[in-house]
Image (tube, rainbow, N blue to C red; front, side, top):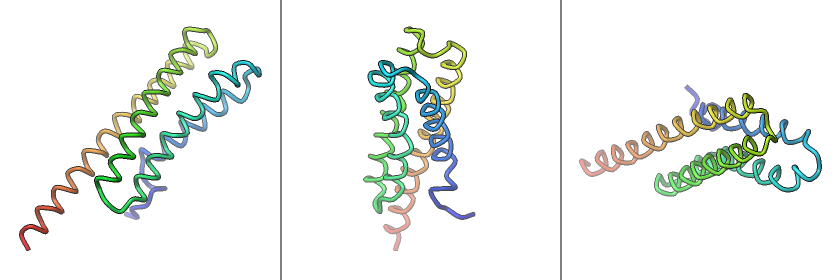
Length: 130
């Protein structure tokens, strides 16, 4: 298996998710794009961008910090989606589907963060034995 960012499933899903948000917002009128649209696109794009930045870091602790930022961006995006739903900007069904996708990314990201933390512990224990 080639362990590259482009093969990391949570990153791939986050990229697709942000593209979906972009496509949706690109059809809105100016007022909606200028207010909530900019915010939701930025937060959705930030999910995969922070995963990428964390993946590129050398130290586990530093990597995890960016993954935590990504988690925050997911929560922010979910908040914007909920506002869109309440305000009738996004159809309820479409919004619910996006919220489910965001939740799936969050669960996968949490599992990845746990994996990274365990990798750090295992490496530390391995080095301590030598």
